[in-house]
Image 1 (tube, rainbow, N blue to C red):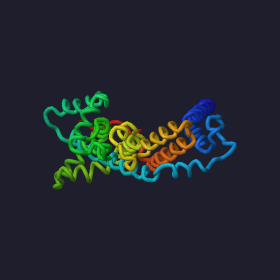
Image 2: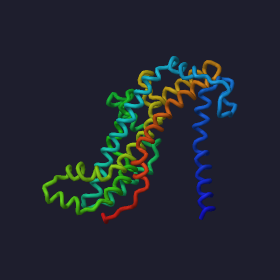
Image 3: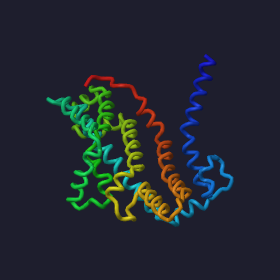
Image 4: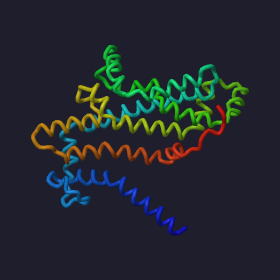
Amino acid sequence: MTARRVLRWTGLAVATVVFLYPFAWLLSASLKPRAQVFDNVLIPRDFAWGNYVEIWQAAPVGAWFLNSVVVSLAAAAAVTLTSSLVAFGFAYFRFPGRNALFGLVLATMMLPGAVTMIPVYLIWNSVGLAHTQVPLWAGNLFGSAFYIFLLRQFFLGLPREVFEAARVDGANHWTLFWRIAVPLCRPALIVSFVFELKASWSDLLKPLIYLRDRALFTLPRGLKALSDQFGQAGEQRWEIVLAGSVITTVPLLVVFFLAQRHFLAGITTEGPKSTP
């Protein structure tokens, strides 16, 4: 038993080092002078704290950061709310064709994003919103097949007797959802929120397609603009770009640690406890 425990902890320690090394390298490289960025030494010989000052002077990082916060929170909140509503409908209501319709929703996950990229752009362009931040989050108002599937499994795990008792007491369907289902499935909702927050925060493709105004850039789009700018100048300023990458990464780490307890509870939950 002791030897097995030693092997287990050794394996976990090795895995931890492997996963943490890229971020440690990123943080170290962002604090180095230009000539030492790629020396693969984790502890800089000379600390260049001015890299972080320079990136704030070279670009409106504060505005980009605020744009990322607004877009990511709007996208995460929209997809969590709408997906939970649809998932609750599939879990609670029993109607003809329910399973077939749910299967159709799941089938949309097999559709590559590149297939719908142009039609979706044309739709936003037709309503005059193609070059705004609205397309970055408003599409989530229609839910997401993945989150609908995830949340439906949680809702199916709730005892149906609880809802029937509430119906006897006069609760309507909205009360069943908001006052009973949502509090009991809070870990799953937090998982959906954190997943979408991370996806929207680090997304580069949509901002590249829709955003033209530099003042509307999110952090990933802004870093791409800085990378292009410094590259065209003749010498790549990797230390500046890496400092921006650290600024982009740290908020996600903070969010994960704040939501870690609920996040892990949502991931490690058991399967359904009741029949649909």
